[in-house]
Image (cartoon, rainbow, N blue to C red; front, side):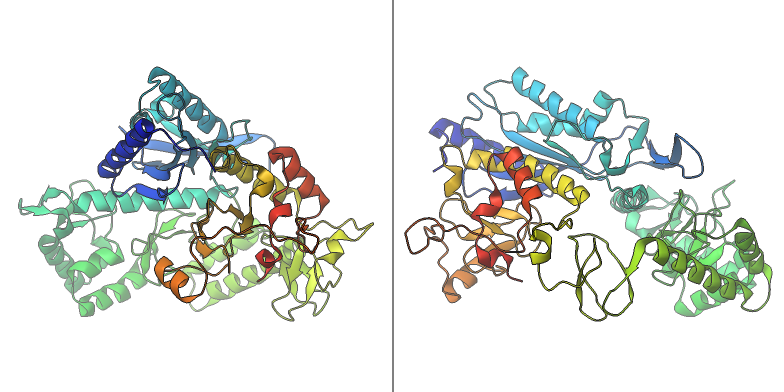
Length: 551
């Protein structure tokens, strides 16, 4: 059994949890408050005194070196997540353990924040410190890192550090991370505006923000005044001049803004006139509503907040070209075709898409050895499944396989997992095992610990005490340790399925009474086993039941 906190420490821990939960009710997420140690998570949105410039570092394929590209200014950043594990001796003699996760900080920045949290504990030794940590991350983290004006992004968070408690969730595809941050910023601005009182600059009446029409230029007016303004322009047929009424601002109304203040009939008339007269108007490829083209590479839809490329209609990609292998002459012809009559532009689009698809297939895909259909690997292990003929084959050697034995045969050079996947898994497991699971297992023999794979995300989860209701530390999936089924309602599952919620399950034993060696052919091969033992001191695969691998 893991050691329990003293009554004094237990009371101070519960009091601190109550305070944190009351101050941050919408951002507090209990992970495990029923067992020891207590684990919970706080979502912390940093406070910005002024907008921050988002910068992305990327390797330019057409030149050498690394360049910086300023993308956009943000007034709000998505929350970072602080996961807290209250150790038995906290707060009397040891600090809580923690993990910081963030999608817009580099690994080196997160390592510095972890070091600073350690220093804050030293300053408050013997006292509760989590609120101090949360307040620091919310108000002082960016000034401490010198990131109040510019925020650099690096693929995957940049070079890894020795600090396992800071986990950068920045995607290796920086364009994806940028889109997520831009979308969060736009939604947050809308929320703040709608909740506050505003004065209409036209009729000077005070109204709550949700009764105002806020334009993309951030100017606004009440919906009554905006409706009258739109109706006049639509009746005149002068939809191109339907712009913001603020002096000196020529920002046009967006489709979703006009739809809020006019009837469906007038909105349909506006759409017809707009497509005919405005070259910057186009339909959003996601929601099929009218969107606005900001420049030659960026268009934004105010209805679904989708940022996309006006040329190829795909997601916004400021760095990579629209179509790989397409010449500049092709793009020039395509852009000029917008002024032509008929469907020449659509035909050129189809031709470029077909050409780009063939180049991508040749570069990234392989032919299924069973039916010949091109297949692209997007993740997971090297055992591939063809969606066309359901054939199983090896991604390394392209041979048809029936199971996982192929990857463990003597003399085989094929591995089940690539080094990239193993390194990513190892970093995640190291952070979780060393920071979260080790406090649970203090005083226990690791050989007696029983693991089971989460049926949802397939990571290893440890059974704590005698509780068979398992909460996956990775994806938050609830499942039963005994049968592996998803648990939607704890009382319903354990009363009807025949599985007891609490039981003293022991490792499977063979006929001689010795612990049975658990294995299955789908188990990772020797390379990841050695890596597990090197990192964690034991191979977690040795303590998995065969049923853990059932689909």
